[in-house]
Every structure is written in structure tokens, then in C-alpha cells.
Length: 184
Image (cartoon, rainbow, N blue to C red; front, top):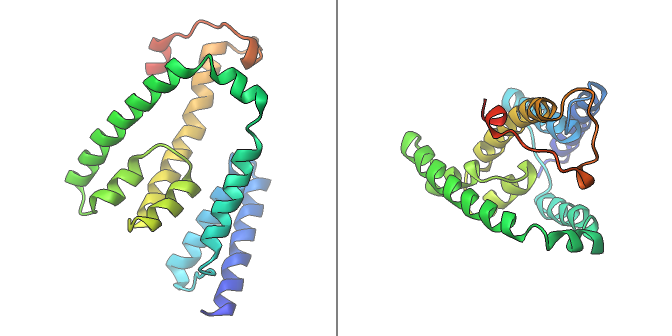
């Protein structure tokens, strides 16, 4: 373990976070750090972190997600259980189908392919994939590309649905969804 490389890696990550947040890139802190450290690793081969850092990040991610769940969240869930079941079934089907296609089209193992396709957060899936022996760099890279496209496309779809002048709070709206517009 080289402490100079670790310090440089962390400094590059902070610099990337700073630049992306100043540019107001959505999820700029995470994407900036990831892009900067990936570039640092590619060009110098010196990127290194403490081995325990992965667990610290998992704990912190769990704290962030867990702290957002409260009684109001659970009360709203009773109205969503049908949507939840359909969503899970569709996501399992999609992940299975696309994971197998990814496996057939590349030289990567099936675990890497499934984690690369699975819906979820970049950080969570990249860290989790390493625990299962996947090529976590590929998982992180594919999820970064996915996240970039989501950041670009989802706001455009949402604006197309709501209209430019119309502002409705999500919790109280009964807006009719035009699925054809979303597909287009």
C-alpha cells in the first residue's frame, strides 16, 4: 500500500468532484470523482485506495438511504405494492435477457454481465459486483454511461409529459401519462 498514491488518488477525486459540481453536472460529485480517478488510473497507473474504504462507502450509502425512509414513506408504500411487483418482475426479466445478450456478445463472465445490466446505483452495484468476483471496472463504466444517458433523457421525457408552463407537485398529481411520447 503506497500512501502517496492513496493521497494522490483522493486529491484527484476531490478535484474531479469540485470541477463537476461547479459545472452543475447532475450527480457531479460522484461522476466527477469517478471520471477523474479513472483518468488518473489510465494515464498513470497509480490510483490506489485503502482496502477498507469499500466497506466505509457501503455503510455511508446505507445510512443515506436508510435515513430517507420514515413513516410517511411506509404509508405511501401501501398504494404502490402492485406497481412494485410488476416493476420487480419486469426488471428481473429485463436484467436476465440483457445480461445473457451482454454475455453472448462479449468475453466477460456472466456475473460481470448481470451486474453491468442490473438497474441500480453506480456506487452500490460497482462495490457489490466486486464482492461477487465481477470485473467491477466494467460494471462501473457501463453504469456511468447508463447514468449519463438517464441524466440527459429522463428530464426531456418529463418535460415532454408535463408541458413547460405546468408545474404540479408529484405527490398530489393525477397527470395522465402519454406512454407513446415516452417511447418516442
